[in-house]
Amino acid sequence: MTFRITGLALIMALALGSSQALAQEYGDNENQDQGMAQSQQQAADFSDEDLQQFVDLQSEIGDIREEYVSKIENADSEDKARELQQEAQSAMVSAIEAAGMSVQDYNAIAVAYNSNPDVQERVDEMADE
Image (cartoon, rainbow, N blue to C red):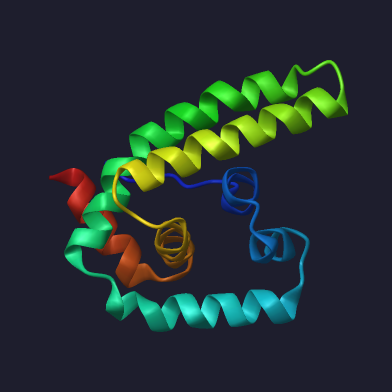
């Protein structure tokens, strides 16, 4: 099984309200470069346990995302869409924290997964087990 983490900046913005994720989404190159450098530097620091927690969370986060993407797309108003985004954020944060992982660590692994082939390989190998 290979993870397909698409629209990561949108997911992180929805799930976590991260200003760095929004900066990356909208092309703030300075913040993006710093974020990628930090993620690549941290890649060697991810323990197998951290990566396994990330792998284990993917199904639940994906289910939450799927549930809310269609609701948000079909919202009657911007206010309703914003309310649904906040609900999705709360649900994802709760799932991450219930698994014993910090939102910051989850985000760092997600960014590293998309930007560092070594992290991607390690995560994909764990997911295939």
